[in-house]
Length: 553
Image (cartoon, rainbow, N blue to C red):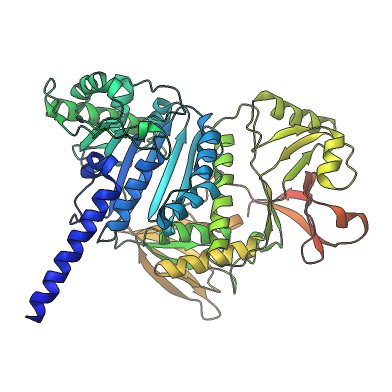
């Protein structure tokens, strides 16, 4: 009888849970039913979405994740063409009031993420990496064409594809979506062969259904939800009838998808992506600085086993050991791939820091902005070329004259320049330690100090590392590791396998200047021939007064 009572109570609780869930998400019931059943063995669910959509749809996906009985990592990839909607989207988030506690907390996290309307992908990480939103701004077709998949061992398999299901949900804030066959083929390229596509846009159902017939998707008309407006609901029940594609044989469409994947693979033969790793894989990282620690944290968020090998007695004793480091994006006049990389990396670093701070870690920082000026005619002309070549988002960078420079800096500056309002400074060694400590909380992450790895080798796909033991001349062997990452700064090319990498070391002078007199008034990071930070604990940090290339050994 006791066992029966527990079983009845369990069934009652499950029924109440399902009833409450259906009440909470009734406007999006059809979308909810597209998601895998709770008893699935799937550990990662990747959803693609065309259009920024409604907050209600995002909250529905989050409710599904919260209700999952088994560990599940959710990755939502949103593709929005209209950059102008971001500001209004954030404003509407801030105006929402009638939300339950869980939804209100998540909404505040979205606001704190401080989305910036620039082209490219901005990754938002929630819940220690278990709920991730990738927001691709700009032309969706271009974004999808640029996405790369790992090399597939089996040319007929789709196990390296990303997306499990798609939805089309344009925001009322943006322009109508241009849904073309070329766009759906690119969506199909990165999708599982079994992926379905649901649409919340009744005005395009017939058109999208026809395109799905050609590209191999099963189309589901979900109906109009929330009028695609934030915080409102449409009383019309979604139409969940599946319109099966019958004009194109499934096998043919899958062959077309595979041809697209193969064509993309051929364009990146010299920079291939490896297959996704398994849960049992282990990672070795040589290095003990900011790059090593933050890579370890990203791997720990995926529950990987990581071991760092540090040449020093503690973390961040080399280039990452400065008391302050300036943080701002490196821009180029053409705003090409490198410039995009630095902008997205800059925003990711800000969010990573803010996440660590909210988790209670102590890291010195101040996002006080960065003011960059030229130090001679040539450098001034280059800065002018950068800032006038593009219509930069003002949160990223904008031009200022000499009087504005003085006002922003708090001291007299007689030069015009570029101001990066979201920039500032971070204490690198504290940032490094916080990232490592957080990683160790999430997964099996450890570090071996005072370990100078002098030799590496790969045997049957596994990596082994060797340390020379003085004075006996013996070697200590570490391994095996499935993956090896070199993040050891100027020692990057010391191994036979890496000696031909196009990497060059630089050394620069670092000075710590006592805060006194006029410098006490400095309110922002000054960047010119090197940079100078506002005071922290009574000292300014000056870096780059002299800088020279390290000759090859």
